[in-house]
Length: 176
Image (cartoon, rainbow, N blue to C red; front, side, top):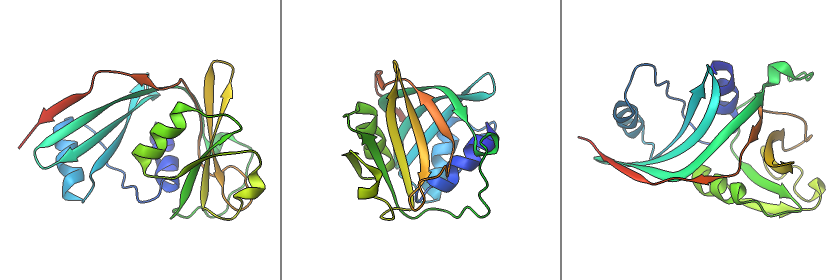
């Protein structure tokens, strides 16, 4: 889980990683708010591995748990891939793309990560325009999200197999 979060931190523009440890979600929200963050991407674990993604919005005294739940079915880390990346720098720009087909998960990630999204038919149309590309494509009844270098289109972050977006009841948590 730790390596997954470390690899993910580098590829999402303007992200600040906050370790939860034994902190409650209210304490994490307070810490994030003190750092100037207005949103939280919460990665939950299942058996020590990444298990799901939730999205939270924070305001002074309120945590809005967004109605989106994305189950992570599996991950492949850069350390597991046969790639040699000598120096990974934090990205400043990114885009979420789907090959040929519209996917709802593309819209949710675009909205929550505040990244543009587009459906494309070939990579050459966007090569070099962004530091990182989140490529989403259907693989049977699930989706694969590949995080690619925007220049050479090679792996730049973890690959994930995920379910489509599940809608759950939104919640609001009040705190001081």
